[in-house]
Length: 507
Image 1 (tube, rainbow, N blue to C red):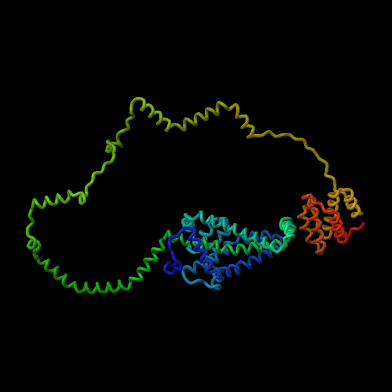
Image 2 (image 1 turned 60 degrees about the horizontal axis):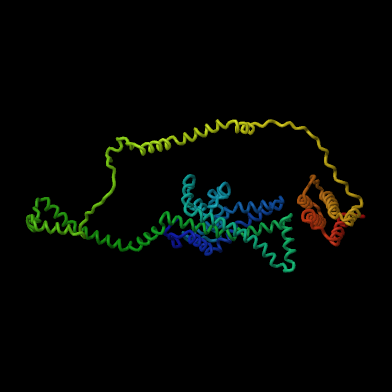
């Protein structure tokens, strides 16, 4: 880094002002930063979501996208570091640099240092200073020291802003819903998100997370870069170095002229100086006594000097009093004398307790444990070794098999519904739907399969209308089983009319 080419005013700032400086730099170079960030992260986002869609693990795609965030943090650091210490890079230069710049330095931050809350300050050290090994660890600690609390707060606020933006995108969808339908739409959206979201909903959630990270991450790294610049300015006095460089550049022409004049004068005076040296060597007597005469001792002059020094404004002497030991010279060799009497006995007792007090406490503790061993030793012995408990082997009867589905399924379901056993009617209808779904999807469900597992298995049914009908049956059964929300007669009849022709049930 060349300090003389810096494009900002370097001076010691507070941590908050340094973070604002970093955010101002991000706003100034926003076009290059965000275009490069989106172009670098978009292929990774598409690839991860395609794999998640194929493996039916869209949540893993979002987690991997968040985990690879330090790789994309190189984009704003590259742009800001070049813009502060020289010309700002173009979009093409930024994209070309991401293929080869900083991979070795950023690798720990996608590994064991991924959860470091000080990444916004320590990552510039690894990427911009080029140190490795123990020197890198020492340099990183030096940079973080003094701004660790602000960096931790910056990281926490960045995550909160990302969550707020993701929640705002969900709220934005609800703004387009009419007010009279808002409550039902919110419940339907919550059921769609929480119960068993389809892959397209998970893909939209991943898209919202990617957009939120893309908006907040450059600001977060820009604030960290501002803290890094401020920390180096304080430690290495960059502001003083810049001031001295500017002073040297301003006085350099004058100094050159002065040096030339001084050299000329020196060359002119040199012959005369050599002549004087030659005359001194020839034994020329000094002229000082001839000018001033011989020194004379004058008492009046001595009294005048004494009166001048007695003036308190001119006098420099002062009296200073301090305490010191009497036997300072022989204190090391002579032993201490203990005062006699009561104070002597008390001092000896305190010295004994200070020297052997811990050993006395330890001895009393051991003695107390020995005296009370009959109370606590059986309890400790019982904890150490537990006697095996003999248990009789009991064989329980196998659980009863589920009742077979009746031939006249619709008549049986309607009979239970008319008799008031509505939960049993829905349970029988749900069992029949699961059996039909498993047959059409060609899957074998494990005993006790949950509703979510059944929904996941139903995606293998070739007909989309069959999948929709089965999903509706599952939702009705979940509301009845877990929320005690049974449908009314009209809703029950509509459900039967939708399922019966679809699954081929007859009376």
